[in-house]
Image (cartoon, rainbow, N blue to C red; front, top):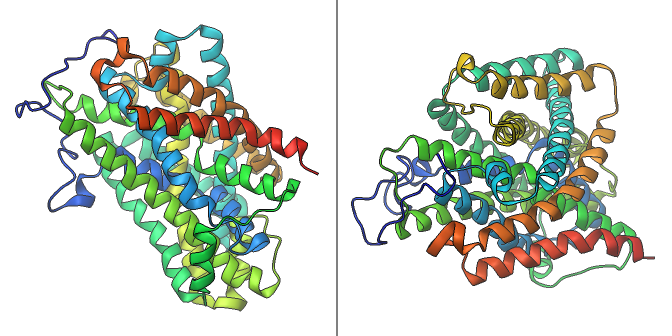
Length: 433
């Protein structure tokens, strides 16, 4: 299929078909009808991200909470543009970049994303095993092997239409962090003030934390996964055509997903501020350290909930990381790809998923420090995100490609602001005292 082979119809055409699970966002069964957006947003809060948000709350209290409402519209604009491109063209992000941009740009973006994703997989597998070890006394290496095996089997051998339902239910693991927040003794008046009145210190420390928050919330692997899953769901619909209703349903799905991810981020920061920071614990390196520190302060119940959240989000995010790499590689090199296909029908595609998780497993077994994984992933994400976001902005504004479905002005403005912010934050860090 050519990248231009999409049928654009009258926005009021009631005969047009759309995703079987996302025909509209109104009425009963809202959660059941949510599509790729909710999974993408929830996967944003992976175990390494939970560690980042816990560290921010422990180090600064409520002071950087204002970043959550600021990041939500920016993250939404990026993901909405990725979903729109795939929805209209029928191709994933890497496939569209391949058709519209010089090959060196494609290969640079691909390399950065695959490296960052693989390192994130290693960090998440290590965090999941450490969390399980705090609940059940088993060796760390055994937990890593167990989780890697379960994820590979599920992602490779379960058809997409079933696997997507499983991923949607895993999104509920984020509720653990809302529950922990209400167990903690939160100063809600201070939370309200710090959500709307920015408190910021012009230091390398504060800027580094903002870079960590932004980089964790607006991550390149989410761009590729969002667009790839839009294509997956589009393939399941016969006689597919784009209408205004479809765009609106997609937008609602994406917003629901990113709002869920950002609200969970805020809940983790609030919990860490109300418990760890308040009691003088200001240096948390990993998510499981945050859970351990919570126990003597907020009780066993809070610690167990925090650990269960790590396990649930890890089971959600590792397949997304591996899948995003595989889709990007397959679109770049023209391989057959789809989680709906059997392994024998898309060998190279599934091989990338298997190898990504295998490398992540190996990095854990050779004894490398998980914090080193996160630092490397943060650097590669920081390099890849602004470049990819600039490319997405250009493609989403291309009327020749998207026709009347190109991104509206408000979306392009938000996407432009997000791109500039991601590019400028590292420069501000260099200039800060």
